[in-house]
Length: 432
Image (cartoon, helix red, strand yellow):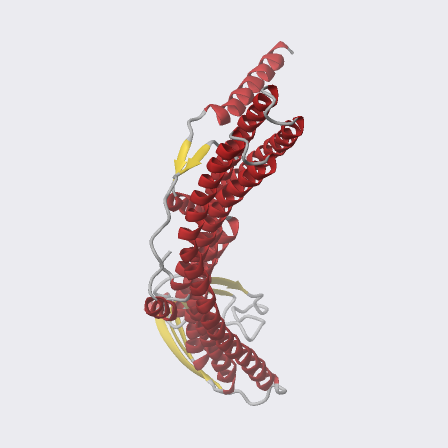
């Protein structure tokens, strides 16, 4: 009993240390590339797609191996009841009362079905590889979205803190002016209302930042509560030219590769179905013993070792139209794959125009958003000076404060919009 209590205390102590370790560990700095690398190792859908690709590659090797001869070392002992006073077995199908078989057999089957299966496996491996790239690019887009959304959430917290501090300062200013009988008490009330709203906004901004941090942490760490900070990267490079984007997208788009692989796989399935109309040639070579003694030589120096060879040609005659129906099934699936390919090509053209226009517009607006923040900052400064001199109302100051906060938040949203648009464009062209 005493021992069990001590063990229980030790277990509780270890659990407490483990729980505290989450918060005691050092803060990790995560770059975008590091975030993508960690997400590729932790995201289950991507890991499953990677497993499918590896399995499909092994299936291709299995299909090719099926075209080569296989070797079997066959061993068997047969006992058959003998006739009365005779060593002749009662079953005429057997050769002796005691029969030993120890043979090496080489078998090979030649037919169109095996070649079609290799083609199908090759196309399936290409399809799985393309799907893996699709999954990777989708994961990259998700990580970029979460990463820059977290950066924006961090900066919005800073914006909310500045706005709350500005509101506190303005409340102090209105109270001083009221004390000096330069402003009415209504100005103080309006400033206090604005102060309360700004502090509520600050609390909401902190909650949003924490949610964004946990969402990204789920993809990065075993424990999403692991403390980390993201690199405060500046705006990435400008968007490439339209010609460069079109060239890269047409040459390196996984959706198109996936659709082409699916079509090749359907063609191979049609070929495999039609192969059932043709005969298969079977070859067999056997070397070993099949004798009443388990020995290379029998009584009177009879040699038991020997070989045999067989050639088999199976010609299909009638299968109640099942082969014809299988051919039609495969042709129907092939037609659907063709439609999917043309749809992927059309979608690529549409997404290319859409993503490029979005990236171009978002990039063009970055300078305008920065200018709006500068203008709003200067407007707030001048309005406060005018209010201090008694030339502006409290409503004008509050409007200027709100305008600056909106401009700063819009600038952060614009940066996230550009990063996401650029990531979508780079994902489409395979450069990210």
